[in-house]
Length: 136
Image 1 (cartoon, rainbow, N blue to C red):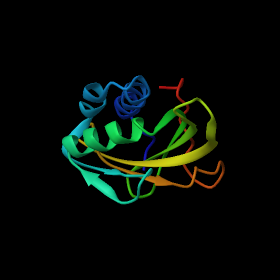
Image 2: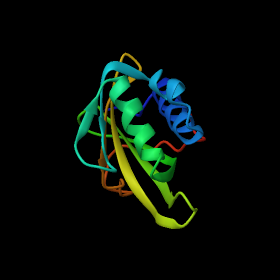
Image 3: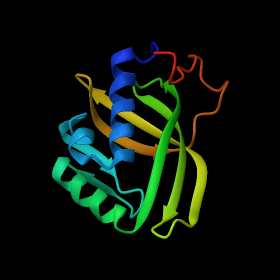
Image 4: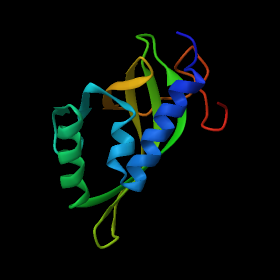
C-alpha cells in the first residue's frame, strides 16, 4: 500500500482534534453513516453516529481521555495505523493512563468507516515509512 494521502491524514487529524475538543458533531462529520467504533472503555463496538454520540457522552461523564496522533502507517490491508499518545484522567484530574496505543482506521471515500484499537505500530516492522503529523 502507498502512504496515506494528505486528505486521509487531514481527516484523521480533524477527528482527533474534534474528539479532544469534545466537539461530537465535528468528529462525526469525519465518519460514514455506517461507521463502526470500538467501545474501548467498555468493550465491543457501536455502529452509526448516534451510537457513537451516546457512547462518547457516557465515556466523558466518567473519564477525561486525550489522544494525540504521533505517526501514521499504512498497513497491507489498506487501512491506516495511527500511533497515538493517550492520556486518561479521572474527572478529578488524577492520571489513570499515559501510554502509546494503536488505532487502526478503515476509510471509505475519505471518511472513517471503522476504527479499531490495536498495539502501537513498531518502527521498522512495516515496509512502508511512517508519515508523521507534520509531514502531510
